[in-house]
Length: 57
Image 1 (tube, rainbow, N blue to C red):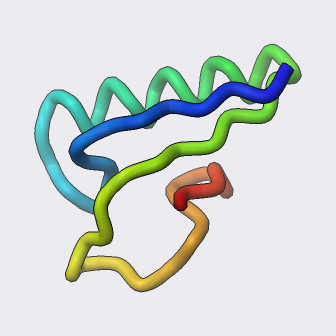
Image 2: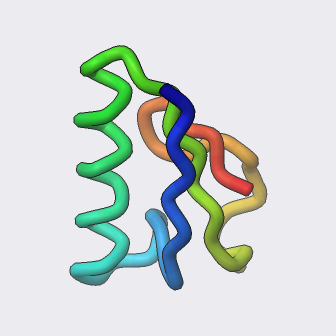
């Protein structure tokens, strides 16, 4: 199943919301789902792939 996670922050930002969004995406991917994270751009990162290869838009 394709799942979109919309969040206010995502790693490399360090806070509870970012951590929870990342863990949710990892758990969904481990179960065979295709998570896509939608988050604001971070000046700390210029990639469209988050940690663990999770697509970030």
